[in-house]
Amino acid sequence: MKVYLDNNATTKIDPLVKVKMQPFFEELYGNPNSLHQYGMDVRPALNVALGEMYDALNAPDADDILITSCATESNNTVLKGIFFKHILKNPEKNHIVTTAVEHPSMQDTLLYLSDYGVDVTYVDVDKNGGISAEAIKAAVTDKTILISMMWANNETGMIFPIEEVSSFAKEKDILFHTDAVQAIGKLKVDLSAVNIDYLTFSAHKFHGPKGIGGLYVKKGKQLPNLLHGGEQMGGKRAGTLNVAYIVGMGLAMKQAANHVEKINIDVRRLRDKLEDALIKISDTIVVGPRALRTPNTILISLRGIEGESMLWDLNKSGIAASTGSACASESLEANPVMNAIGEDPELAHTAMRLSLSRFTTEKEIDYTIDAFTAAAERLRSISSTYAYTNEVG
Image 1 (cartoon, one colour):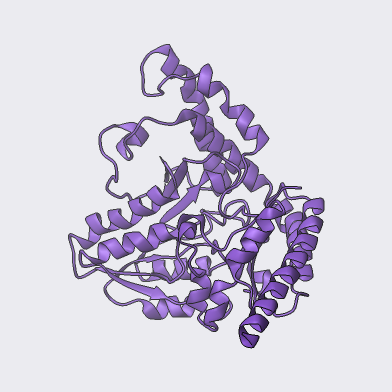
Image 2 (cartoon, rainbow, N blue to C red):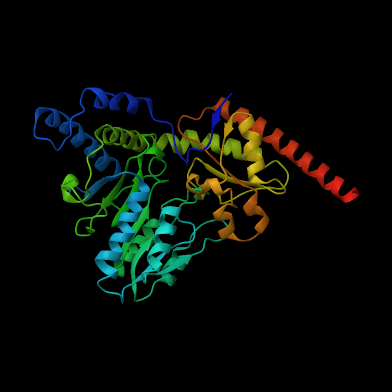
């Protein structure tokens, strides 16, 4: 059996999304910015797709949703846009507050901007992997121009206090951005109810195609273009529109919003069943209270077993999991969130992430429980034999 439990890295495309996209590869292939009939034929589908995104986010019509190539581009657009529009013009307002566990597209961009005079405060997570709103507030100074924090953590699934912090940012006249990549489809995201200036999302995290994402921008909070050279997206993001993928993202976001209840009931039940079985393995911990996590995510650590070893053992059984963010996985370094928690350095090397989706089945979870338990016993046996041999030798 093959079981895919790495849905926080990427998801399979929804079959309905694939069907909806297909005509735009072969039949409706015109450039929507062209004036001829081929171009005009595809424009209605773009309008529908954008409408689906606005509805899924409950975003006011006056605000913008910019189509980007991915969440990384969206995050870069916000951070570099803030630098060029605000910090470069007023160096006295050069401070950004964020968390120590943001995605590499945030951390690497902030590291780059720090070479140009941007002052960044990274607020640490607590022992559960959560972020305190009070800690974020305490990090703010009279030089703070932006607070940026993810809505839900990609490693632990811990949900961060977006509503409280965004409200505080509004009171202090500070811009607020959230990377909501892990929230859409798992949590209710209502942009008419929360004070958010910028929000990042990516289609492949909610069963849409890879290579397409978006950036929500509140009215009056427009940023300089990251890409120049065309009048697409109202002149706010240059580049020929990827119609098939935009259509796919629109339907995928609609489906994701419609399945939030299913995720929070059916997928949560399967997640909890898996977690309850795995924590029976000796010397095992799960990071974060499950009630405070997205309903699909487990970050589990088995003391004495390296995450990479377990990963490869599960892979032999046809089970796909991960030791952390796919954007940083090639290094096979210790899990960054476990490092940030910092309570036990060993645990940073033993953590594994299991993330379900609405397509995960009970049969797959039962198989995973058996395979994971057997792998843990096998690897612990090997480790014990190796330790005994070294001691005797």
